[in-house]
Every structure is written in structure tokens, then in C-alpha cells.
Length: 364
Image (cartoon, rainbow, N blue to C red):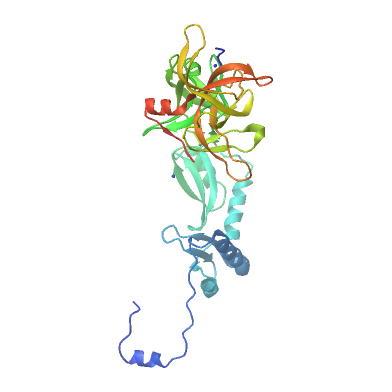
């Protein structure tokens, strides 16, 4: 809502050594592929062994402790082939095809699973099919064991849910109006969404494009124009991204270095999406009327309109293809004019709110 006021070779001693001294060349031992190899190399070995072992193939995986490639087989006589290909053989009971058939049986059951069944999958290293049941719910256990196929039940704490991201420049909805997401930040305990203070002063529960985010945590307006929303819903992720809408893929936040006067900046918001311009002045005092005076704002000639308030201002991304990394500048505060004829827009520098509330910016 824009105000207008806006991560050993043990050397064998003895006769045996004398014998080996006259022996022919020793065949080189095939090294074992591990996670240090390229993804393409490991994938090629897995595919080749899966094909050559045929019905005896029982899956492949990287050992969680050593990182070495392990290949399962139901036929012990195939072990030498597996070693020759650079993997460690493991003889198992069920082939990959058998496990897949068990999973398919669960997939195709006419009786749908209760909500307490979180899902099912082939556990390749364990060589079985696992059904995940929330909290040992009797209905979930009954569904898993009544399928007529061998499964292993695992107990999980909670059911899965779709995840959605809070992205800079997208919508932020309060009970009394709509604004835009500025940036995501965190402290030792929680995650927060930063936006404009004249938006957070509306208070209450705040929603985003995918559902409820949480409630307003802090707010400062006038004097300043920033506020935070505490993320309380577990299905919300807070990546370091800003939406460029139709102008291209999201840009990613690398830091918060300040763009000086004359430098290029861009902003994102739900009303007018992505627009760019130049910084015209720093540390400006702006009078929005009705006693609402805000100090320390940055003036730009990037246009904005109502609803863009709180949205991300970032350094202008470089041209060309590839991931676009930008520097976070601040949150849209207010301005004059519009995006048809142009105008002046002010933003609240993000560093001030980070320092004030002891927050760390989510960065790429």
C-alpha cells in the first residue's frame, strides 16, 4: 500500500616375497567410484550396470558413510562384474523390479490411504518398500498392512504439506490492505519478512501468495518506514529472491552494498511489477502529510504505484544469461507520479531495519 503521501603396503617378509619377486605383472585393482567422481560418471556406471545385470539388478546407491557406489544384485555370481565396473557389490533378496511392483500395488489400490499415511517409497539400501505413517495411527497401520504385499512401516512425526516461498516483490496482504514483500531475514530463532512500516502498522495476521505467513512482529512509522512479519507457518520458505515478473527469472540477493547517487537500481511490487531507474539522493526527509514525516530515505526516479509499498529495491542486475546476483537496497516507501508518465519513488534502506532489530539478511 503506497502512501501518497508512499549454507602399508605390508611388505611380506619371507619365502612368499621371494616368489612374488619373480611373478608376472599384477593386474591393476579397479578403483571404486565414489561421490567425488562427476555426477555424469556415476550415473553412467549405474545405468550400464542396471542394464547388464537385467533381472538380477537390485538397485544402486552411494554409501552414506563412505560415499562409494554400491550396486545390489540378487545373483552372487554377478559380483565380479560389478567390481569390474567400479562399484561395490551387495547381494540382496529382492530385485529392483520386484520392489517396484510392490510400490505399484500400493499406488493402484482402490482404497485411498487415510491422511495419516504420509507416503510410500522403495528404500533401495534396505531392499524393501516403506510406508510412512504419522504417529502410529491405527488406520494408517491398517492400510499399510492390508495391501497384501510385504512392506516396512516407519513412524513419522507429521504429515507432509506443500511448501511455498515468500519472494521479494510479491503480494503481502494485511486485513486492511495490500503491500509487497521486501526481503527475507532471520535471527538465531526465527525468520522474518521485511516490508514497509506503514504496511505493518495495520497489524494482525499477514498472508502471502500461498497462504498465511504469520503476524506482524515489529513496526516503525512515521520517523522510519519499516516493519517485520514473523514467519510462523512451517510450509513457508524464505529464499533470498526477488521476482522480476515478465522481465525475467528471479534475481538472488548476494548482499546489501549501497548503490550511491547516480547508480542504477530496480524495484519490484505487485502493482507495477519490475521497474528500474537511478538513485537521485540519499538520506532524504520526506513529508507524507498528516504529521507523517520519514527520515533517511533514498530518492529514485524508478516509478511505483499503490500496492508496491514495501517491495524490494535492489541494484540493477547485469545483462546476459546466467544467475543474476544483486545487492539489497531497501523497501519501497512512497512517492509521486505513476508508471505511465513516470515519477519519483523513495525507499527505506534495508540496513537500518537489519541493524535495529538485529537481523541477518537471507543471502544467496
